[in-house]
Length: 230
Image (tube, rainbow, N blue to C red; front, top):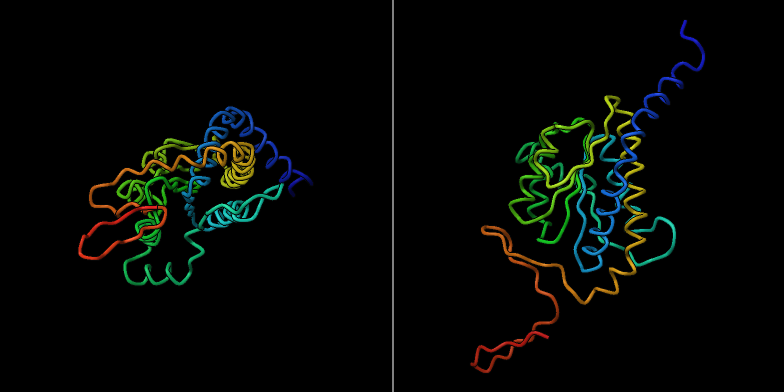
């Protein structure tokens, strides 16, 4: 018979072991939070996706951004792609499950946006396909994974990899990462909003969607074909 408390002790031992290398992620978390604050303050959006428990983690993050973590602030644009159930099931039915996120990225992603993909294994084919689609349309890709190297980490621009072989521990530290990402974002947000006059840099991608125009477009007809952007 297994001794009382051994499951708890084993779990906490595995978590404690993963916390030691995780502490080295502080600078990366601060950098991600600041980058995300400036992009969202300037009108960009965060797209997130995952499978199973990672989908729940991803949706937890979007809830914190659209709502709030601690203090009241303006809502920030964040979309959990797996929560679009009708689109997801239609795409899976018509194109296959590998494309359920890639097609949504092509629909919603714009240069200046960030796609954050969560996977404990780093091998989910639908997330790898989404990362490739994001590169095609000029969206920056970040990954939260388990131990690296792994295929998803290789497919993304940046990765925070939790150094643990235990799936539960990886998911728990992904949740910690989401909370800290929001903390660092909210710390940087006032400065990002103050700098809001500088728009997100938009670079057209060959074969990708046209950049979204900002402001109000007034077309002066009268046969001149002239237009003024306000």
